[in-house]
Amino acid sequence: MKRFFLVLTACLLCTGTFAQEWESLFNGKSFKKDWQRRGGKAEYVVKDGAIYGYSVLGEPNSFLTTKKTYSDFILEFEFLMGSRMNSGVQIRSHCRVDGKKEKVYGYQFEIDPSARAWTGGVYDEGRRAWLYPLTYNPSASVQTQSQVWHKARIEAFGNSIRTWVDGVACANLWDDADAEGFIALQVHGVGTNPENAGLYNAWRNLRICTRDVERYLTPSTAVQVSTIPNVLAPEEVAQGYKLLWDGKTTEGWRGAKIDRFPENGWVIEDGLLKVMENGGAESRNGGDIVTVDKYRNFILKVDFKIKPGANSGIKYFVNTDLNKGEGSAIGCEFQVLDDTRHPDAKLGVKGNRTLGSLYDLIPAREDKKFYINNFSTATIIVRGNHVEHWLDGEKLLEYERNNQMWNALVAYSKYKNWPDFGNAAEGHILLQDHGNEVWYRNIRILELE
Image 1 (cartoon, rainbow, N blue to C red):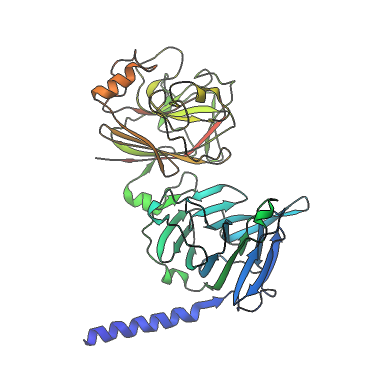
Image 2 (image 1 turned 180 degrees about the horizontal axis):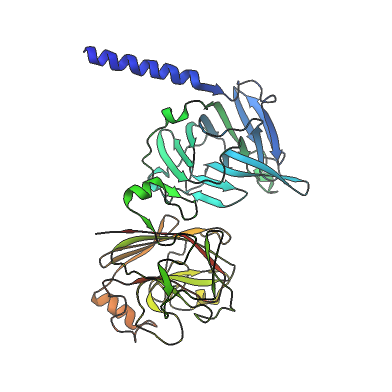
């Protein structure tokens, strides 16, 4: 009993200390002293102790920003979705002027009334788009009710940005783009449809802790995702991931048909491994590159970005002794493609040459989300004969190999003449030169037992 009271007393003292660390960002009466409007001309008003933001037709995204900037902090607030308008709260954000227009950019805590329910995800406003969609943490993708106040918590400490909604862990991001910036309340642009005039969202009880932040950080159950080029997140290190490419040298890689790294066709610059443009010819510039080592069971993650209209691929179970002639080396392929602009997307059977497909064999989901000008993460999971393709946290397909159905599928594909295609116990990992400009980074692997 004595021990219980000692622990209780310590908890109360800790809670009391934490209460003293909080600073209110809005007094419930007026925001004019500490906040300013940037970007579009949405209306922000105070009502019932809260800040309400109303859409204005024809205006771009609008932001009510703090005049003060913040670095490491814990931010808590309540938000209300009054209607169907997308919104968010910016953190560590900035403003640039393009011509005569202000453009806010930076991390955004998403407020999403749509059916996908990505509230609590992290979006990079005005820059890189989605950093942590809730496809990485689907259990947190729960439709938040409109006309109901919900509670949010954001912890920004060093490279770590973590979010909660109503006590549920949502995002767990590891990123180093911004260490400091303002906080802002977004009213999304709604176009010119008269039905969208006067849509609103609201925020209240905004408070922030900026002192002794590390002491009050909360454990998160959300999977950690790193968007720092060629740097493993702490949780990835703990799990046993390793980088397959160091971001600087060609170590660990060679040409698929030569015993050294190609002298042309590939460029290493700014932490990116770049396939050079060569008119779309397959493996006729530098040629494909493969890992020196072979891999059996693994989780492979590769960040990629493609030029509009580009074609490339990530292959596994590659046997470099096959196909010594023209064309690409032989292996199972996660297709990397611009489905909208490249003609290969219309070939094959039922979309089995589209982005994320097992090339010429199994089509990826048609409803996949892909942003052409941003990096996406391809994930390939191999556990024995079971294989899965994922894109930005969404499963695109899965299959079993080394069985009658698999062999029959291969028999009706372009791989029918390659002996025992796709059934090898192990093989090299390959990045394809298809003569189009493509960038790779964050190539990492977790070997499984």
